[in-house]
Image (cartoon, rainbow, N blue to C red):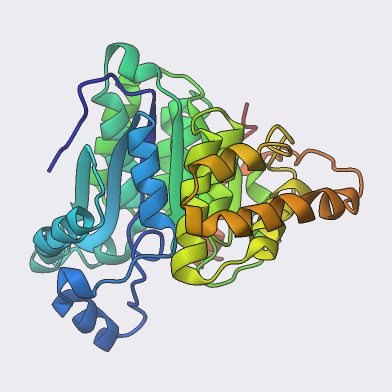
Length: 347
């Protein structure tokens, strides 16, 4: 399904679904069965996710959804997104049934071998001005999203060679055809540093410090006000749009002014905001639902005090990414041979 607007897109937003947009449980076989049988109206959205997805689309974002959910769920997922008022350009789901029938058992759980070729193929299909659009990516802490998205960003920027990419995917246990598909797309991509932010929803309450190894480009977040703020700080969303995301959290999920303010301060403390929005709560308030404006007023009142307590903020560093070590750690293959020298420094 596609619902692209007539106006040319301003940026690209790539979304995961499970635990990023949908509150999905799949830790046990019973969870998998229950998720597969859920009706669209029974599926629960992560608080604020639907609002942010709508705002990104309204702001000129071309939305691409890439999920590990099986293709057999496509109809229900499309109906759920439609119920939420979400527009999207593409929806890619995993061919798990095909993998099982072909006894490709590693592919059922291999996220890098599935997601990375799909991401690169999507980027390779873009041409002209579309091939130069900035990107934001949203995933979660339950799978390999920080690793896959970072590697995608650095391959797209020309910081990872074809030989390095091949070694890394084979180290991850990807099948040969997945490796070849990724390499074919990587060869034709117009190499540019286009990925501005990689947002990781802390569904499992993973400490944000766990992602420091990926550098400032990766932004762990606790609620959807936080990515909205960072994207607005980057100029891709308006403060009024942030106010509408905040409204959903206030009206539907009992956030108050203090929770909103502390969400903002948390990002400033971790160095993910430049401070451009410190005085913009009034503009956020104008976009907010009238019933949520008291909470925005409280946020504006609390922010100066909370920001004043912050120590001097050093911008997050840009560590060298040892992708071989990250792949081994992610897949718990500590004894696997490591290809040497597959390290890059993000631009």
